[in-house]
Image 1 (cartoon, rainbow, N blue to C red):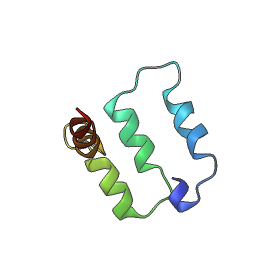
Image 2 (cartoon, helix red, strand yellow):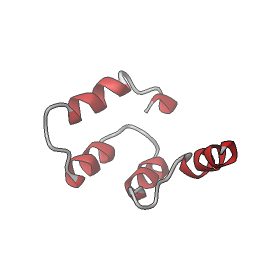
Image 3 (spheres, one colour):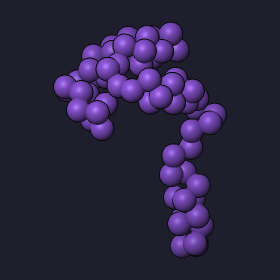
Amino acid sequence: MRRYGLFNPYERLKELTRGQAITREAIREFIAGLEIPKAERDRLLALTPAGYIGLAAELARRVGNKG
């Protein structure tokens, strides 16, 4: 959201998630309503916990090399 200059991105996400259950449908609706390029919305909608590992592999290699 910051990448595309949306106003108060952290606060918007916090409002969605604070004090309530976070459902797949709620996240999908939130993403669908974002004023960002369609390709970026589609990319976000395609993310899953199983498919997203971020920097996990790199961090694991770093830790493994220290031991």
